[in-house]
Image (cartoon, one colour):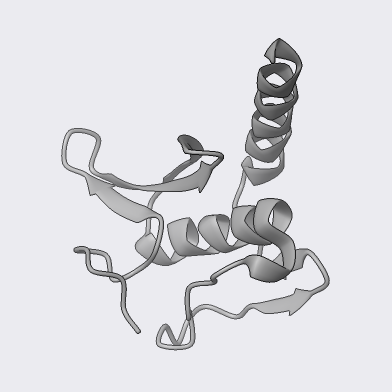
Length: 104
């Protein structure tokens, strides 16, 4: 089932201002940026990586099979090819989540 947005992917939107695709993920009622990408398929991969990382077995992944040029597979929490900078973004989100939990 396609996401009800212009990209057709969950967590992916187009930035007209910057002319790139942005990936975001919702965690604990807050949106976190997973970065900006040249193609919507790269942004969808970034969303899938973040979803597996933070939602585990409850992750709702984008179906990337409709893109012929994209090869991907999931092996536990590993999804390849990994977009540049995604690991740094995930580390920042983890730190922000830890800080917000400690504030309570």
